[in-house]
Image (cartoon, rainbow, N blue to C red):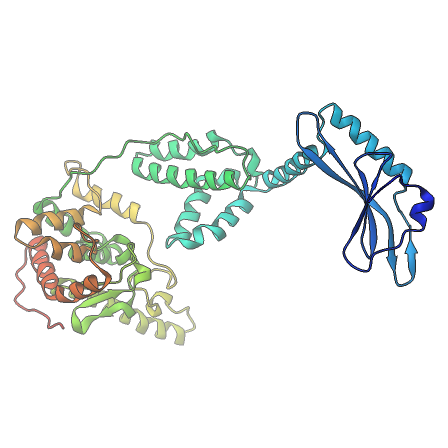
Length: 434
């Protein structure tokens, strides 16, 4: 309905029983009074010069309740027309009050986001993204170590140089591949923070690599692996057994590092890792050669001895040995796996001498695949020992499970043969298996 509004007319206004009614003021075009059962509200609509048509809500003219009409703090007719005239003048100049309010609100939200500390945002990243990763704790520690100097500062103070510095520092230590891993973690975190407007720009976009990585062609010779095997006996009881199990089982480092006693099936000469424990989301059975079994049995024997000593210490009032009661096979705390692989590797390199060509722990797996293929072991057996996905066409889920069971005996023979090769032993005794 259109009508030149007056105060007298508005005083006689009655609310509708339901829905809404709208009265347009003919004196000030675009000004309307929207009347609801509980209140009447002013609004004004005007097109901005060169822009969009905008609707502005001014405020409440009056309210109705069971006790009658109220006008406390109400916006009168004269005030509504004055506000409409003000907005009309702004729109004629091309000023968009609605857009300006949105931008102001957005800037305030962005300012609030960038004012949060880096630690706050990193915690949010941990909860929303890292919690979906198997190596959640490891990745968060990596980021906290790299950004340690900035954790208590507003995330808005973070710069590209702040991200590049820990990459360069790690590269100066000669750990180029580790520097590249840190770069990848920082790039993802920076992009995540930028997309959620904690950062004004993607400051991780142009971070420099420490080195250009290429596919490794290094294959350890049997003589080299045998030399490493011999030197592991100088690493002591803490590091010798896990490194020797890496060599004998050719599993991933995390698989051995996190190996639990509850995963061992010593009577069947194997251990079983659940799907959640493996990198490629596939559960895995690993055969234990007689040499690998003896390594594990020696560790368990030492832990049994530690339990006995712990009980004696408790009787004397001393603190018991926690590691002896842990389900983890390799632990010093009883709660977490052993740590310090990089220091152990540096020690092992010292023992091997300067003439030993650079190598990595992962090279055991490449060496196994190469040397066993040369001895006629099929690629499918090698792949399943290493827990790789099929290298040819992808098998169905049923086929993968069937083939895994079918090749257990072949896999066991391959690992027995491998153990003989790398330790230069002849295993006359074979453990029965199913």
